[in-house]
Length: 136
Image 1 (cartoon, rainbow, N blue to C red):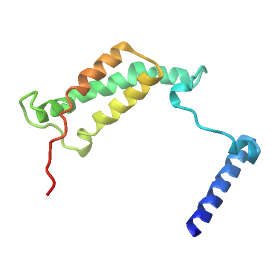
Image 2: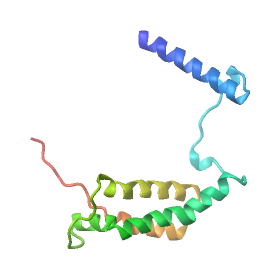
Image 3: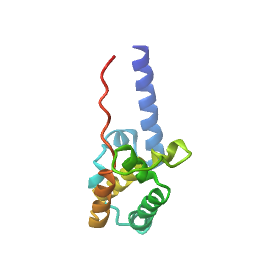
Image 4: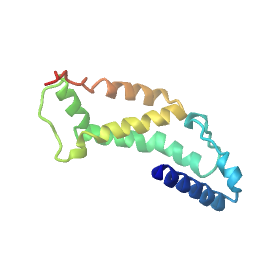
């Protein structure tokens, strides 16, 4: 019960703070509901160009770096699709591709790009399935 009261006080405080920042009344701020990000459309001169640069420049550049540094090759090697040794000295060498795949997927959900979709499919096929492990 004590935690529930604390949560309610925090929620009320956040709504009040949000209302103060936006100029909305607390009642108006409490009525705001989320919408799926795929239903949000930017048509402004600030975010829209940045999102387009992300789709056409940043994401392809990040994929190119993964290719250059052998991060995709590591997946192919782990999955037996390619011979070779694991490349990379950092823990993020194997996690960065997942983050880039996630960003590219969000970008595709907002604006479809056939080239990006095809490239993304080719990268995903390199990721080996999890190994079966029996419970001990």
